[in-house]
Length: 303
Image (cartoon, rainbow, N blue to C red):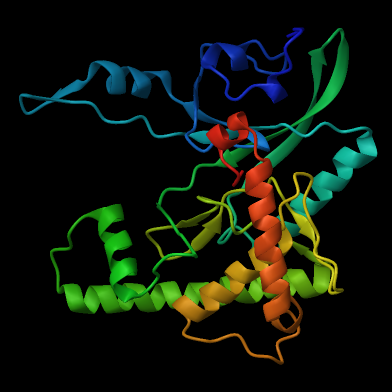
């Protein structure tokens, strides 16, 4: 597809837009629909079975009633907005993605296959980074909100409906499972920070999903930050203090789900959770939101 309009600059894409991309084959096999979380750093498209879309649109009759089941994605297609100056820049981005996938593993990050393609725009070809990612079913986990036992049970109900068996036993067992898996998630995140010097964006709305099996899964790998333990607060390419905010999320998961308050002797928290630094991060965050353009506000700051 050679067009004067760069898809990376558009707020959203349609099914037909994706079909016009050079690297998309067999256009009749899948249907592409914009996911509600399309954001600042990537287009996110649901990859759907056209037969399921047909059922969603026209309905199916079950026991004399017409139902309109929403088509569930087979995969998620991510088309990154990042422009790379060189192949080396693209390889460095892929390296950061690989670090996150290696440390978190399939239990805690949505499996994804990244690939670079040629994208024809403005009469020339540029590198376009894409990813075909697993679709993760579950509920959004909001680290800044309530994460007590009643909240977790409510999320479980939303995922599976009311239980028929002894709710107290089932609920206690499920919450305990969430806590055990959160312990592993937090441990892996801290290892990544200390050993690899990287942290993914954990703070964006919808970046973390709680699955029915009790795992917390990261579904957004668009904004991976280098971690430095000096006094300088690192900002991403849009001026957001993603590193500090993400480490704050790790501490919130410990505090709210594991019942542990951050300790002063923790090598990570002793740097990033100092009161003066937190105050400075808050000011930088406010400056970032003020700088957002109307189109940016439409797609959201999380992605």
